[in-house]
Length: 335
Image 1 (cartoon, rainbow, N blue to C red):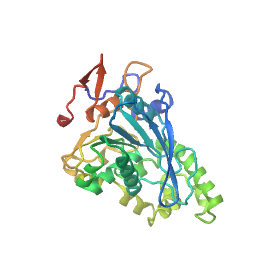
Image 2: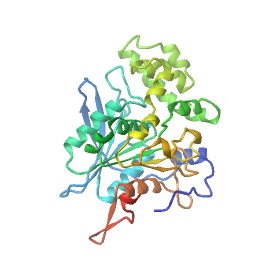
Image 3: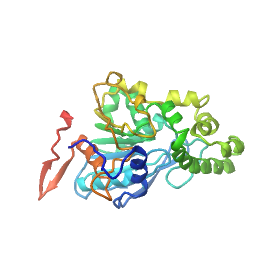
Image 4: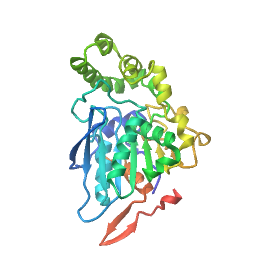
């Protein structure tokens, strides 16, 4: 499969990021929703893409980004590719991201690997076929952190993994989102994060200071008031330091693909991990362009096909051809 190359008509990381979300064609996907009760009394919603009846197929699990969901453009693109492959897929929503407010004061965060561990172990227990995990943006950091923390035991749960546009250095990413044009993205995140946080105060009075929530104009300020104290961190600096996946990349043993564009507005290129900072199990692909979870390709108006095709090729995707099976052309062991 060819390396990613941005179309000539879509220059720069900002355009490549925004166009993918706002304008790129996204395929339709029909999900089946299921609600899981969590042992602590809360719940999460999962959206399934079922495979054709009569065959056991591999399962691709997607963990979305900050304030993302199964309706995000990358979720539709990946699940449509999974469907074409004849595999099964599932988008697991973090707490409060499925359109329904979660019950407990806690929500989700960039280092929530314990939650991800519970989700993956449940899926592994219900699935007799290989499980492949994909994390996008925040979900990518959480997935990489989990893979590093669990080392060799992670291979008992997932066969392969992929992380896309993961902000593995949360301090560098958070600071980058705190100034300049990047405040456009920050305001979009804060619009829903603040709304959800203020709604929680109706059910959990005194959880935090509503005025400070309203006045937060950066992720650093919001995390200091809400995310950090709700999830056991001292402050934003403590949260961003302890939740970053980058220090754990050297401990990953599951074959994992990491795709980050060097012009990703969310993570400066100097913060990307170097080869000596990761294990041999990681395949690092850092194309010069692509934006943040952009990777639009083909002539105008473009499509979102490159990223899911690259991920499924790494997972050893085969496709049907006149009743026969043929390999995608890539040996997963050689990638």
